Image (cartoon, rainbow, N blue to C red):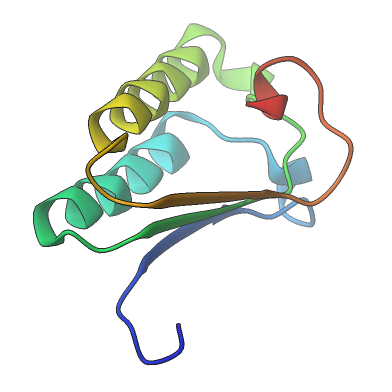
Length: 93
């Protein structure tokens, strides 16, 4: 971004409504950990329908990992989150 290294993750509404399951959340967390390790900003583009309900609790556990890593990055590296449609509940965080 403007010649700087960043870490980026996204949820794309055109793919399964942007829903995130356990594996997708693990990929988001992986980018967050790289950001923490390298000190680079983390950018998250959220265009999501929320958790992948077909996965049940595993999907929610994935979101818990994302939230935990939000806290780990807080005050250490910049975090930029964009929300691309109306969101409510967890999706609005």
